[in-house]
Image 1 (cartoon, rainbow, N blue to C red):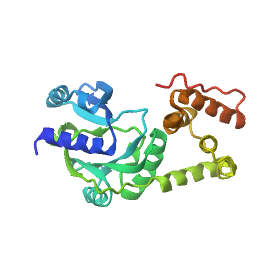
Image 2 (image 1 turned 30 degrees about the vertical axis):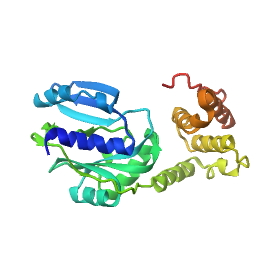
Image 3 (image 1 turned 90 degrees about the horizontal axis):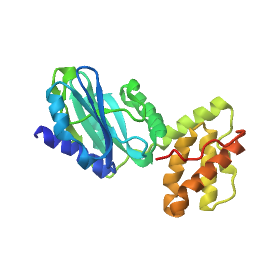
Image 4 (image 1 turned 60 degrees about the vertical axis):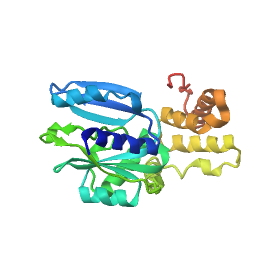
Length: 265
């Protein structure tokens, strides 16, 4: 395949996985970073990126920040391991160099915000010999169809892009992390399990309290609640989400409810 075809194969897999916006980053030889953030995949400036790459710049990409996505990034995965993952789950394997191995973009069964992606990445990296230093929930990966100048100009190619209809389930990784947090702070498993209100609002209230009890950042919980409740609450979603977060914070002993959601974009 030609270089541009590798790029399109990568983006096509992302689209099928549900990713429609990305951050494109170029690192020049001088060390300067240039960013194009939150662009639709069709609006990414590939001709400009190719010109930069020809002049020695490294080209990176990631699903746009702030949003919840159902793909996870793993770095420096041995090629044999990466291929086995792609033969079992829906996955995109990007060969970066002989020394660096592969990047793996793994499709999950649910959308995850950065905090949860970080937890899942750490759990997976320890099990498949991926780089533990490249788990941040928002880590950049190399864009297929461009040269990796760090490794002598090796072409970055998409070597597997599978759509088997089998997604990885992050629940074991997330529950493991939540149990560790609960153990550390000395709290029992989420108080939300004791709530009797089984209405949709009641379930969301219990879920919010449980996440905050587990130590999740209020803005992260707020964004997830907006995504979860938007189809039901419509234009009232943001007010409802902010009110729910603030009530939960007061319940947990905060002197003042400090999160309003007004800065959410």
